Length: 204
Image (cartoon, rainbow, N blue to C red; front, side, top):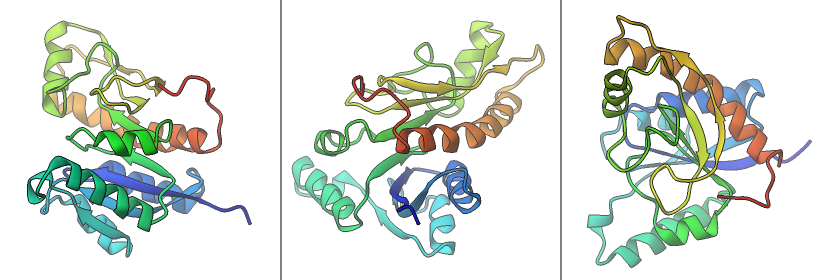
């Protein structure tokens, strides 16, 4: 039996994409195993999904360390201890430490709730993204999966799904349609990354 890639998922909130990835590993859409969940918030609801599946969790807060360097080293040690091979950011609202990006370059993906590069960058998350799309008058939105580097939403785009914007859309209605596509897209693109189906000569 082929070895399954060991995946760490990083979250900050509800964890619906985490749940979708876990479900995708069970039904064979995603050829990997979620072995570790990292949260930037102790009370992130998504941690319950991990605990229900007996997946190890870790709350990572830089302010709890003597220095940013100590924080980064501890996070990398935690990933090493769990033999993590790939990282999937799923609503994680912080930049990864540079040493983690270096160690996993080309093996870290993020799901963003709008079409990149137009709606990316610091502060563009959650409802802020959908508000910006509606304010623009654009007729379509949709999630983007991209590789992660040292800059918010900057890495190479691996896949997108198009979602029409309706004339009567609100932030909530648009968000609800986009997140359905996020749950389908992320596992499929992450699986392609694990299988080596993207050109590794350009990992950013």
